[in-house]
Structures are given as C-alpha cells and as structure tokens.
Length: 201
Image 1 (cartoon, helix red, strand yellow):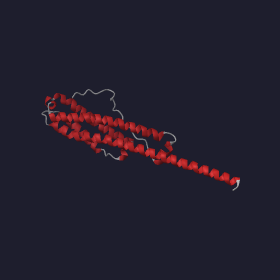
Image 2 (cartoon, rainbow, N blue to C red):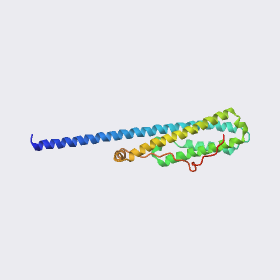
Image 3 (cartoon, rainbow, N blue to C red):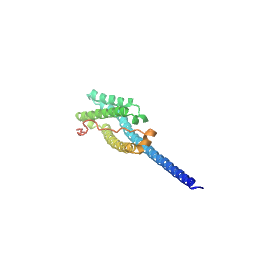
Image 4 (cartoon, helix red, strand yellow):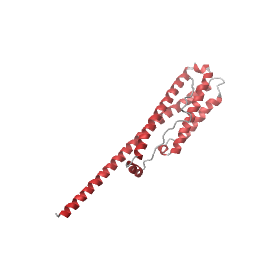
C-alpha cells in the first residue's frame, strides 16, 4: 500500500467518522426535541383536565343559584353562555401549533373565568346561598379548581419556554426546522390581571 493510498484511506476514514458523529448528534438533538414536545403535550393535558373539571362543576353551580328566588337571571345566563363558547372550541393537538386558535381558546376560557367571578360576587347579596351547604361545597371546589388551573398554566408556560428556547438555539434550530418542530404559544395574563380582583366569598 503506497503512501498516497494510506493518506486517502486516512482521509476517507476521518470523513466517515465526521459523518457518523454528525448523524449521531442529529439523532440526539431530534430525540431531545421529541422528548420536549412530549413534555409540552403532557403539561397541556393537565391544563385541559383542570378546565374540564371546572366545566363539569358549572351546571350544578348554575342550577343551585337558579333555585334562589329573584337571583339575577342575566348573571347565571352569562356563565352558561361563556361555558357554551368554551365547549364550541375543539381541543385538538393542532391547537398547540396554531397561535390564533390557541388565543381564541384562551379568550373563551378567560371569558368564562370573568363570568364566574361576577356570579360569585353577586352571591354576596343572597344570604340563603351563603348558608346553602351544596353551594358552599361547589364554591370551594370551584375555587380549588381555579387555583389548579393557574398552577397548571404556569407549569405549561415553563415547559413551553424550555421547548421554544431549544428549537431556536443554534445549531439545534436546523434539526428543528428540518423536522417540523414549531414554536408553541404561551398562556398570557388577562389584560388588567396585574390588579387583583376583589372577590368576596
């Protein structure tokens, strides 16, 4: 074997090692992106679960306040309508890849939160509701669910931040773009959320 052949084999081997190294790096980056995407999906499912829990509590809450004489009809009607708007939005995996649809989903959920807050403030005028054991249990469950929604949304945003940062970083962004990984939207605070609402239970 001549020196030229040895050099050619050495160069060929070096190129092969570089290619294998690049492929292994790409596979590692891709697998990491898949793991992060799964974390986002899992965090999203926890948010969905809490929203569903709240939606399931609402009919009983509305029926309880309906049973009180002279309770403002427009107040519980607003809650019912807000819940109907939320139920019209189909929760599909594509929702996380469509910022406009995600924003629409968040707006509907925020509208329901606002209607529920108004309902619970109105309850203050009805002592019979404040003494109703069924209503008090529903109110406690709803309050707990609202807290869990807040916690799960915060967790979701943290996972999304990690995912979005990874797919934008160089050189992983090449693999992300090639494999179709796209940025996910965040939950945003409602306008005026920096001011704590005055809700008395």
